[in-house]
Length: 232
Image (cartoon, rainbow, N blue to C red; front, side):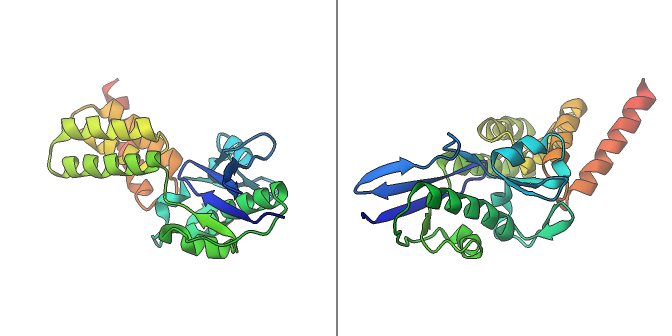
C-alpha cells in the first residue's frame, strides 16, 4: 500500500485536510464537505460540535460556540465553551482532531510526519497529530492581519479616514475579524459617525464576548444608547 502524507491547514475561518498519494493531492471530504469551518461548540445537551454543526449553532448559542480561535494562538487568553474555560491550543486541538479523524476515515494507509507551523505546534501536540503537516495560514488570513495592523497603525497616528478605509478592507477579507470591528468602531467614533461605530462595536461583542476589551466596549455601547435615547 502506498505511503500517504497528510497535510492539515488550520485556518482562522476555515480548515481542511489533504492527502498526497503518489504525487497526487486529494482534499479529503466528510459528508461531501471539503472545507470545514474552524468553529467549535458545545450543544445544550453537552455534545461537542466541530465544523458546520458548530457554525450553525453559533446563531442561536454564541455563548456556547468559539470562532476564529487561531487569532488567539500565542496569547494567554482563555475562552469559554459551555461551562468550561479553555486555552486557545485546546480549542485548536479539537479542530485538528476532527480533521485527523476525517483523514483516517478517508485514507486507510500509513502516514508520515512533516514539519509543523510553529504557531499551531502546541495545538498539534494536544491533538496527537503525529502524522500531520500543519501549513502556514492561507493568504486570506495573512492579508486580513496585515490590513488590520496597517489600519491600527493609521488609527494611532490620528489618520482616521485612512484607517477606516483600511479596516473596511480588512473586514472584506475576513468579516469575522473581531478586533478589526473593535478598532473600526473606535475609528468611526473619532470621525463623528457614532451609529457606524456602534454597529462595529456590537459586532465585536457578538464575535468576541469573552475578550478582555468586551466589557469596555459594552460600556461604550450603553453610553451611546443612553445619549441616543435622551436626544429622541
